[in-house]
Length: 351
Image (cartoon, rainbow, N blue to C red; front, side):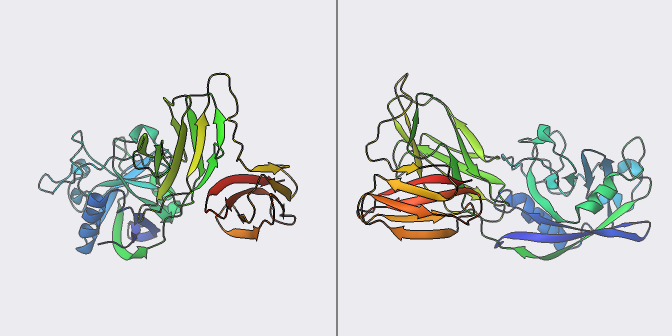
């Protein structure tokens, strides 16, 4: 059982001379079958002295075929038919620069020991090959390998061997995404909305839920996406929708974000009239904001873009001044909790 993302060093040599070490971490929270297979192979030094037998500049490097240890170069990449195979784990994870993915033939469930590392985005592979890791250090050595002189079959003229060893685990918790747009409580007549959130630095897959109730007892949409936005369509006028997002960093899955909501108004109505909505002015500002339409004894807490609390105060009446003068410019978020524990959320911008 993995506690996070297992990491491995891939030492590469050419003609006996060391090229360098590339470190990869794998994604058991995304492709557990492929990660278990790779880890098992490393445990008995399967990859040692196999080659990166296929290099294509602007695309990827591929290796891990047992034939490449000592077999004729014409057999490199053909694989060993007696090897156990791994069933496909196709997800919305994208083939970006540095991504490690499973090589296979025309059968989606034919992956075994061979893998490839992308040196550039390869969108045409998305959803068709199993992403199960990425490079976290030493990508420059991958670039060296992909540019090695090669023959017409993309085999390097000089064999590039690999030696793979387990080095530890990255147990970093997945960050909870911060929502961006549409602003909670906003309204439009559009029957489609682009939902956006700020992507954590290690985010790979996000799960989006949209519901007609704030408890998400039932969901209108519930799906994975590979980017930090999703367009929800087919919305019905007169309804209030709630949405939230979590993050899968490959090793762990975060809790859900704050719950935001939006209205779908009637045709021609641009704003939903909400007499209880918090008013912030001016917004944006250089640092001073007036929050009005508050309940007495409301707690106001301000967070920066990383989710760190930067200010917390309680209002004495239905308005409260907030001063962020001297804080870094950018987007900040607020939670306002009244004495009945009702929460309103939104964002302010310091210019």
